[in-house]
Length: 91
Image (tube, rainbow, N blue to C red; front, side, top):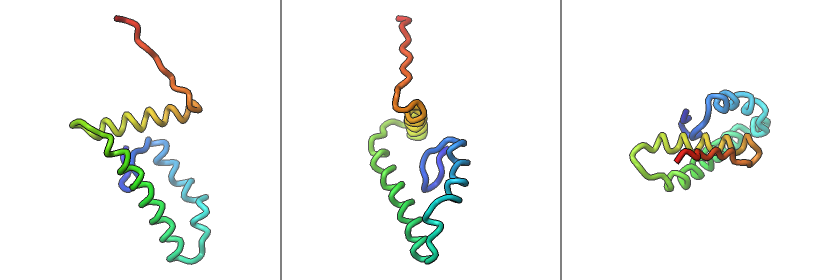
């Protein structure tokens, strides 16, 4: 799924945003304007990073490309940086 302003995510990661928000140290800032500014800055930074990645996409179905790239990256991170390459040798 693609969350507005947050970019691509899996259902598990999307649900994980809730406990992450509860333990986020930015929420401990008492000054409301400062806290909201920090949250807004984080969202803008995340979106800016996605713009750079979005420039690499070509083709008609950008959603599928983003989804596949995200899932591949997610699997890479889950496997501690080891790619699970399964080559099909049926030529």
